[in-house]
Image 1 (cartoon, one colour):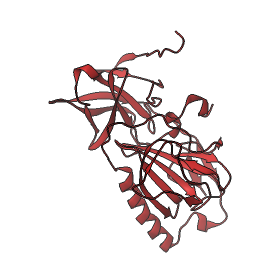
Image 2 (tube, one colour):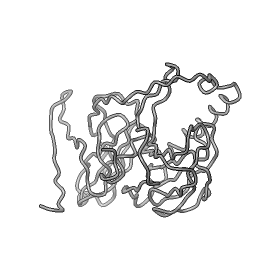
Image 3 (cartoon, one colour):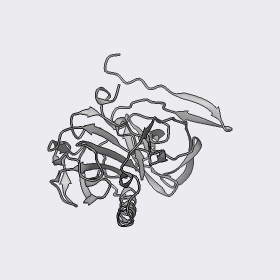
Length: 287
């Protein structure tokens, strides 16, 4: 039927229990589901009518976003890039009852990029730069785990800028054959000075100028969903400010450790860096 949404389910036996999965399936109002490291697991929790209040869920000790869609409750779970494939469980509290819900994570091989640099200072940081970077990494780690309870979270993102999609999420980089952290965001190629927009409504969690990321904005969309905009030439918002979807928050640039102007855009969900393309309309994703 035109305009209708078809839900497909698979039930299979793994590790001695039944698992309900939603493989690479888009739901109305929800991101695309991908049960892989760096992906987003959409897990059915039950009928809205069966629970007056939204269920509470946790992955380990980290709270997880819950939303309703088509009269069903869903947990929207960010899966860390270093998450081991196999069986995992979500802790779920509905009313006075707490239970666990099992789900599976499949392996995914992300592409690799090997770069040789003659300037070793680009690979081996000075003692002062390393100390600064480590302090900033600790601060960013705390921001990623931030949780603000919100009545509603807008999960239908827009691209912050229009441009060619560059280095993909999860790319594993090697500089002079030394491994670096996987690329935990999406690069959009744009010239310097292009307006950068908020992907969805939210509150500005933090702004700063970091060694690696340059001028950066964190926007808290509520319930553990955070977006991060890096290498900006200019920041037009301040911490604590409320922003609307599509509102200009700054201008693109190449501050920090960037070799050219572009926007590095990251999405954080329950503390995990996840693939931003899962949150944008299908026609804007990499084909």
